[in-house]
Length: 455
Image 1 (cartoon, rainbow, N blue to C red):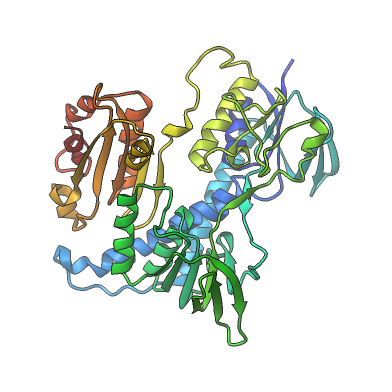
Image 2: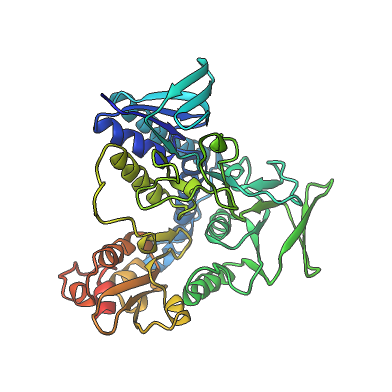
């Protein structure tokens, strides 16, 4: 008989799991209360990257004279940019919805919760109360931005990330709280679109979880473009004034006033209203659902994937988790196979220059006393980078000095998010630096720097 597979959450993990399970013969029901494709993806990730692309063209135009062109002075058309962002997200959502429909997946618009180990009660927007039986369940409900008690978020002057795009107006002076990946992308995005930007950095380095050399390269670019960095300052209060300005107070007494404030200080899992206790599903102290290599919770037929699993909060990871969970539900991967190694997941930051990394970082290796070999090649020596007029950044490869196996790498520069894929394949498959160095690559190309760093 067909497996009844119920998925709570229609983000990257949920959609991928539904599609995979349906293709393998399951009877799939997907419950989503917002947008098929995921709020974090279609209301956060994709819009920000689309706006960054627009800002990138403005930045390129500003240096067009260095490429032999007359000076260009394009102006932002905010309405057109908003339409472009909405068109992109609408197309992705429609594609996901059409795919699931073509595979016979039942999609219910509503919110579901567990009522015991195999029953899901759904408050449907169109069908009222629905009770579903499930042989297997996937929790893929994602996460939401964290809001501290001292932040009077109003969606107008004090914003969460998902309220910032497409924006109704470009902030005159944006104060960004949070210097992690999301925070620095917002700094770059709005600076490229013409805003004055101040970034409050609670430590002495932006991107505290990244290679210090990588973070320093981005800091240099921020300062060169006029971004103000408030280091060693932790925000603890926000006041909105009658004149429309907003002041952020920091724990060291410093204060900064701007036209808008944006919070980018982490996220919380959407797990508190899922009825997990009725099924005996365990969560950690933060509310995430711990999973094993098959994405199973402590209840074998209840799985978790995406942000709610507490693993890397990346859409790429969620896609693979969703597929793996569905395959396991359908009887695949029950024996030994290659498990997901989250330490080998590639990630990127869409600033300018772009930043990407994978695997073991240099600072991390030194911290644990591991012997490594580090080689670095600057793009300033790369012909394609010089041709493109953007020689900023470098490629760094971390390898095992005894075996030559590629352990990790970092890239700062143009197209870093694309180039890191080569290192990701090398890290995942235990390739050696000689495998990269002896590859016959295109000339001239940015990727040549990969082979040079591997020599």
